[in-house]
Length: 84
Image 1 (cartoon, rainbow, N blue to C red):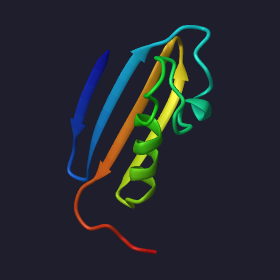
Image 2 (spheres, rainbow, N blue to C red; image 1 turned 60 degrees about the horizontal axis):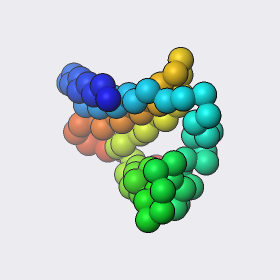
Image 3 (cartoon, rainbow, N blue to C red; image 1 turned 30 degrees about the vertical axis):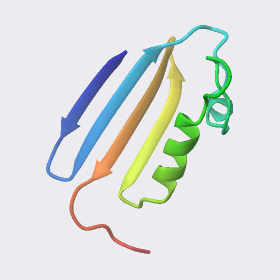
């Protein structure tokens, strides 16, 4: 697993990258509550993370499969958050 953290004046970006196999399911399926490639009684992490991100206007998440890796970019805006 590779993790990186970058910060500038307006945001903090956290990047987490894991290698995957060709058989890795689509991202949408991995975000389904209860889905896991690791067995029973798992599979809530990505679903919970998505729910938390959706509740916070100052946080965005990009999740993708790219060149043999599962990649997540979490971007947290610093300072005032504009409400719609």
